[in-house]
Image (cartoon, rainbow, N blue to C red; front, side, top):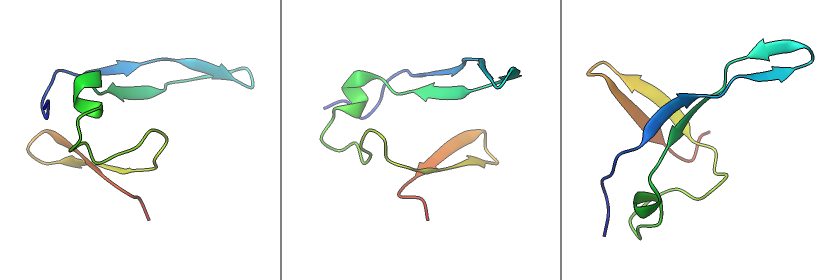
Length: 63
């Protein structure tokens, strides 16, 4: 069981229609994402918000 691990926040800039845009991703370690307690599925739409205590909160499914 791996309910905790080290992920990474990255920016992968992309060009669409001749304009450059930032794309940000949060990578979840495989051992965490494949744990039976992990609440999300690949491709699932989730709500992301910032907690005032410098925490990123992910809640799903999004409305």
